Image (tube, rainbow, N blue to C red; front, side, top):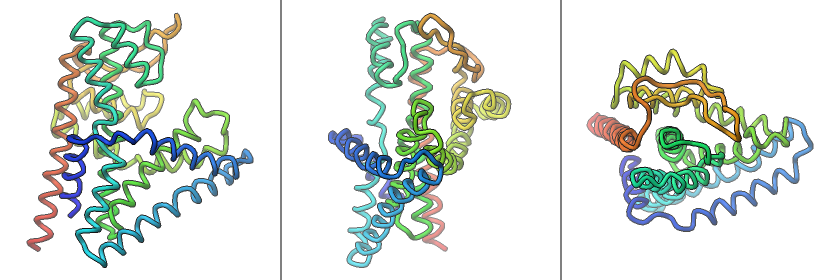
Length: 312
């Protein structure tokens, strides 16, 4: 059932993207701001209480809804899983940015590509050349595919295996990610100790998905280079967990990522990741292929496990 729910959600998102997702995130922002305003007294324990109150009731409610629907009719529970997956995962949450950058670079419209990348990444891009725009776009695509697809799938499957309904796992992952960006990111330094718990929980939520995604990149791409870059380069990235993902993706593609970038007249120091050639539109196309191969690999693996379970 988990396999078919994932396939249905992916197909639904491809053929009918959720146009109201911005309103969903608007509601989530108001929701988490309520807990921040009520509980933020500048201490770590307050952040822990706020996180638990914001996340556990919602995920518990989703588990109860799934169990109730399964009791009424398993098809209703399956449809509920598809609905939650449809709202929490998908390529369309980032692919339109990537496609626009690719098309503009192909047409030598550097300014337009810079503007789209700035909107997507939130960083200053007006000083970047074509190779640097392509490089950062590939990095963003690898990160976005993990956060919007691979991470959701891992937690969906884990909760499905535990019998709690995969929808709750998908929601837990996305809520944990959202609270980290709202309270615990580097640009949210004003939250201080209050955001520490959200950062720590997000680390644990990401630990397994990042490594599974990186291992998959090795299997469906260049295995030797992926393993080499993972082992020798990931720790040099500012955030080692993200470094694992980017270094593995770069090694799998045979492209050089990371490296310093011009920012407001200065160079932003970034470690070099990957081996091979400089990034260009050809590697952008290869990135799309890598991500789709990884998703198909996971679906095939899940299909084999499901079949083994049924035959056993």
